[in-house]
Length: 235
Image 1 (cartoon, helix red, strand yellow):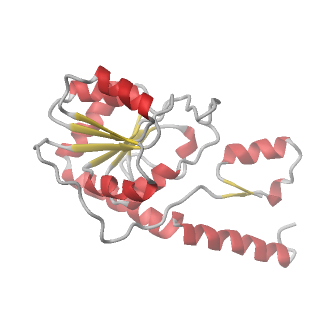
Image 2 (cartoon, one colour):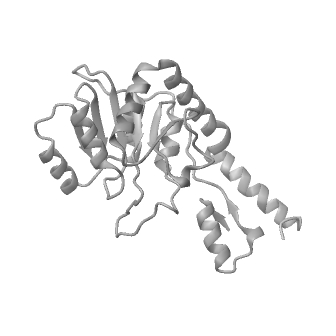
Image 3 (cartoon, one colour):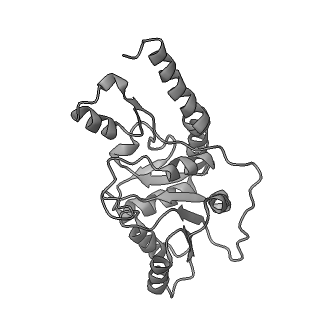
């Protein structure tokens, strides 16, 4: 059995699944194409800050809106969400010029947004909902995070247990308390001012994808485990 988090592994063990027959491998990402079109920004802002993903409860959209109100010199781009969600957010930010909502776009089109970013945010909260309800914060291994890493951009992300072992503060990202607006603001300013740190964590995140979490590497790890099973080494 191949699972994406240790929490899933522990739950299967509780239900009498044999511990030595469970492989834990987080999700991953492919390296992006070298040729990706950039967005042509007409107005000038200090930073172009992007969030790409769904707008369901627990994804931190309130954090993003509040940050945009406090940091008027930065422009926030929100890619994702259905028509109703986007309409509501546009209404409550109608007087702002530094936040843009793009709504749902195809996965292939997200590349130009990620490639155009100065900073990528993933403000997951302690309760993360999906379509249909249910809190997935203990179970998830978000594809979005690995895709972020593959674009060699500085990432600011919530400090949640599920990312332990994958993300490390000031190593391949900046980790912040999920609901602390002041920490998100401070981290954005840190990325803006400390160019060396921004470049370092972006490069390390990319290298982690390339050498640890690409889909090819993940597939090879799975096949390696099954080869051990065939040799009766994994019983």
